[in-house]
Length: 390
Image 1 (cartoon, rainbow, N blue to C red):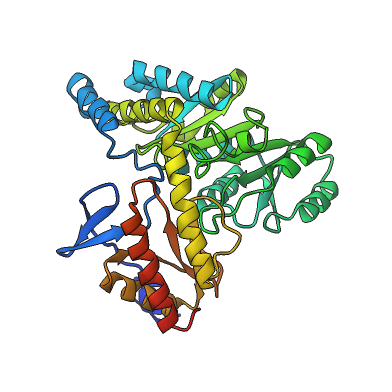
Image 2: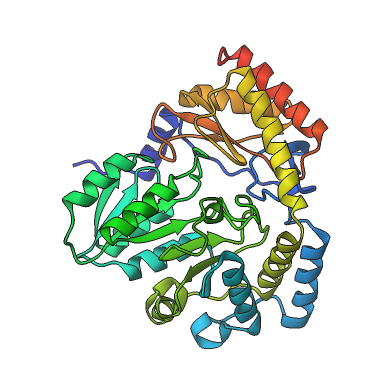
């Protein structure tokens, strides 16, 4: 039997139009990057509140770098749990309405660590079909039985919950805002099922934190469910402009994670500067709602014009705006044409999204000026018309 080589697999990926390359960028500002000598407006950053270049966030990181050094060089379980961890953990838990928080290196490791620790082979997980890859991988490692329900379909979820009643432990896992479609989970209805059937509920609020709710604490606040999840995960690497993730729950479960979550126990702790930057960013959004207000003004402006032009934006809400193109090659064509117009916007293709739904994943950030947005809208509409998408 002939062995399949890596080269052959890569050639097949190229033939399917799904070959990926890394673009090495130089950041010029909160909204602009340089690539191969040319300047581009960056339309695919997750720094929704543009805090990663905020002077107070940068100053906090610089001061901490001088005081604590470049890295901790140890795991949290050995000597890596410096005092900044305790401060940030308490502050983020209080902000979100939980008793206690535990900080992980990133969202992927948080999801892997928590879900693989929380569930076992006798348990059942109900998972939205569009959950993030980190959640899917975590479920595989947990060895629990995974039952996938149709995206945001409460009736399908309830039917499947009823079918698997009586198992050792059943848990629903969902994102609050889905990273590729930009739509929101029906959290009130999911919570109702959790209560009615005695399930646990794990919420990934990575794309909701700092954006939704009157005080910006996330989708839970928007749905009048602040602090009510069994386990809440979110990140510092999006709206908060830094790096790392946090898990919120009751004190007993947090202690359980400290003693059992392998991605917490066996990895090097975050650099002190990242912790300080997160604390500074959190302080900013807690005391000043103008960051969120300006972001939403930009979101409404961009969405209104792109919707009005006739693009398929799915059921997105918030700063994630998927411009669905369809075919892989056509999506790449649109990406390349926009690059020529000074727009940096990446094509998202299978397996990240289902076949036939390739798209440009546009994200709106607070730092955009009206001129930035007008330039982007004009370029996207022009290319969309030339490719007969609108």
